[in-house]
Image (cartoon, rainbow, N blue to C red):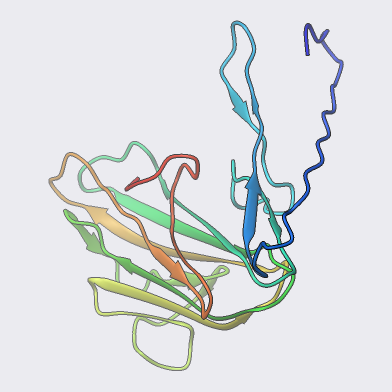
Length: 193
C-alpha cells in the first residue's frame, strides 16, 4: 500500500465467494497482518470479541454457534511463592446459542490451587459440585454453562500459588455440544502457553 503518513488511515476491503458445497456451520476465519519497515508486525483483531485479543474475525456459513477462547495468567513473570491468577475468556461469536458449554482445566504442575478462588464473571463460585456453574477437587477444574447466547461471553478465573518450578504451562479445553477447542494466550500460535 506504500507509505502511510502519520495520522492517516488506510482501509482495505476484500470480498470472497463461499462455494455452494460449503457445509452449514463451517467457520471461515480471516485475519490480516500489517508489515512495515522498522516496526513489529500487527495482526487484525475481531472487533466483536473485546475480551479475546488478537483473534481472527470469523464468518459462519449458514449460521450456528462458534466459540472463541483465550486464557491469560497474571502477573507474568511470576515468582516462586506468589499467587498467579488465570482468566479464561469464552465468547460465542456465532449467530445461534451455544449449548452445554464447558471448560475443563487442570491445576498446572508445580502449583497449588487456592481454595475458594473460583469466579464466574467476577462472582464467587464454590469449589464443590453443587448448583453453581463451577467445581474443583483441587487438581481438576470444571465450569459449565447450559446456554451461551450468540454475542455473549463469560470470564472464568481461579488462582494458584507457584511452587518451586521454573515454568508454569497451562491450557484449558473449551467445548459445547457442537465444538471443542483449546485456550491459548496467543491465538495465532498453537500449543501449550
